[in-house]
Amino acid sequence: MQQTTRRTFMMQVAVGGTALAAAAGAMAQAKVDEKDPQAAALGYAADTTKVDAKKFPKHTKDQKCENCQLYTGKAKEASGPCSLFAGKHVAAAGWCSAWVKKA
Ligand code: SF4
Image (tube, rainbow, N blue to C red; front, side):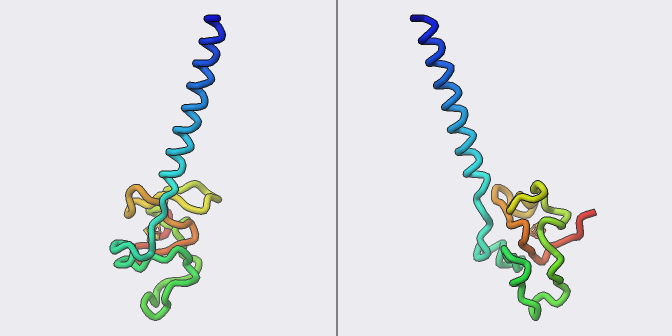
């Protein structure tokens, strides 16, 4: 009886831990909205190919968040953290006017 109780408890811990990890993962995926005041002020676009060339004449389509110095996301992931937008992810294929070539 005692072993069954212990086994049940361990399974509940495992399930609970998985649920917490999933919840944390979902929270980490909150994306920066192009309409957020800070994002709009920086001209952030989730797709670098859609950046207004007249407004940002120095922008080139090979400039993306994924090759920006401020981007700390993992390679090949669709989004990741940027030090300018705490607590949210920017699109790997995105861009903003603060772009700096990754060293
Ligand atoms: S600072 Fe760099 S990583 Fe952050 S949104 Fe702008 S281009 Fe993307």
